[in-house]
Image (cartoon, rainbow, N blue to C red):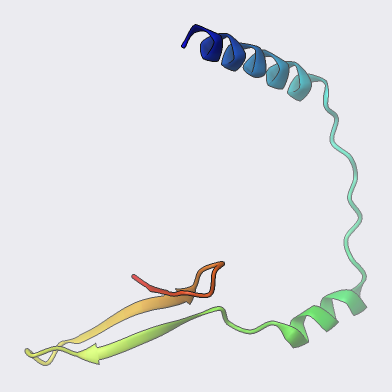
Amino acid sequence: MQKTAIALGLAGLLLAAGASTASAAFVPPPATCVIESLNSNLVDARWRRCWIDRRGRRRCHWCWRDRWGRVRCG
């Protein structure tokens, strides 16, 4: 337990020291042809599943696929 606390403390100090000395690098925007080609291949990754319950109310949930391909609705 004591070794873990010391290791976490050292990791925190190293992270804080590295973050203070880091400088932001300029990242140029992508070319317009790259953006246009991406937009043609993009599809909506989530959808709504709706139904009518016993009392006649419309119920909807958003559904999506997680990184393993399983459908998640919530």
